Length: 123
Image (cartoon, rainbow, N blue to C red):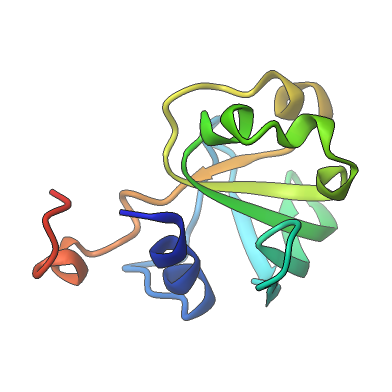
């Protein structure tokens, strides 16, 4: 798994189902998956989600592992201050910045059919 593949799956909505829940068990409805950003900054721009009966508009950042947020030092970068959702393949660590700002993390590994990776050495 790499970030480009994860972005592709997100952009083309290659999921087994869409009844997403975040890592805290709260429902996350994706109203708009956003526009794939191929430049610097967050991966998907102008997205909309609904969680806890609140609609949020902003940007979505994707990572293979949640700890990549720390590794890439996004917390220090103003371009990442309008994140409304952190999407990861694997949630390997909780991010304090997100907890403090009530930004949900969506772990995708159980929403992707493993047959997608049949010809890849991922699982």
